[in-house]
Length: 454
Image (cartoon, rainbow, N blue to C red; front, side, top):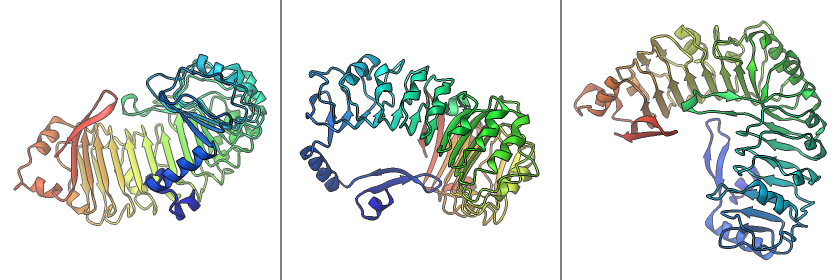
């Protein structure tokens, strides 16, 4: 991908807070060439409601708005890749079963994201060359033991499904590089994180680089994670207080880790991550801790490469335990505090958070004042305050954030909302935020943020 971008064949449209590629696209001219060449060589075929036939030797098939098939599924011998897109009439288990009866033995990629499936057709487990299986967003509840037949499988994505437990046979898939389970919620369900149970022996999958959504339902699971030394991303849920020391011991061995998510077993459980032995990850760029903390773990404050940090339900009581301990992280660009602090005042002191670009303060129930000192957060571009109901005043010193491009107030106190909506252009408060291009007030309605710009 980097090579394609360097040659201007692929254009970067947006990047994540950590600087990684988020979305990309093609120049119109490049796209037309690719589409033309693809048709000439029968490389990729798009099946839509208007075009429901494909060439005899189709290799890559993309299905859009397409349920009824006018032709027999007999021309799939060369098929390597199938992807569906979410549409008005979802692909069903019945259709998929008929489709796979076309015997696409060479199929390597089966991307069924969002399909209306309640089970996996038996024909899937005959695809011995299958490398990539995406069932995310489907209604699948059970992964049968037949999964063990897919000896070449490298990626299985079950994010957002109803699968609650992995079968023992999945441990036979020694080429697996990525297992994605469970999911992460949104504002409406308090940023919930859920996972999936696994059998003891997960440490046998030594090629794993991505393990997202594994439940720590036994100390054996926590211990075996330490054997997965190739892991670059780990999300572990339902961690108990007594598992903390064992988890830190496992993390010591995961020297390739880039992203880490740790979630406790219940809301009042404490994440016990304060021990003398702690990981020193030089590559870790993203960290989410969900659970009560006695204080920010010392090892977190030493993560020199950390770019994204979210503290969720930490319930810390002292400003110095939050802002003071994190302010010198040299590469932090995004900080989210969700129910992470129970004090009344947050003060961003001079010289702190030099590279921070995004700050989210969410559901800080007792927060009344926010203060920004000069030369604090000099790179900040996006600041959002969400659900901090006791705040009645604008953040003090916000005029010091000269690069701020967006300021959002969501689900805030009526007093603050009224004040922002009725600012007199001659007032001091107006002068405080007049340099910010976008100021928005909003509410969470029907699963999304609705609001107005000032």
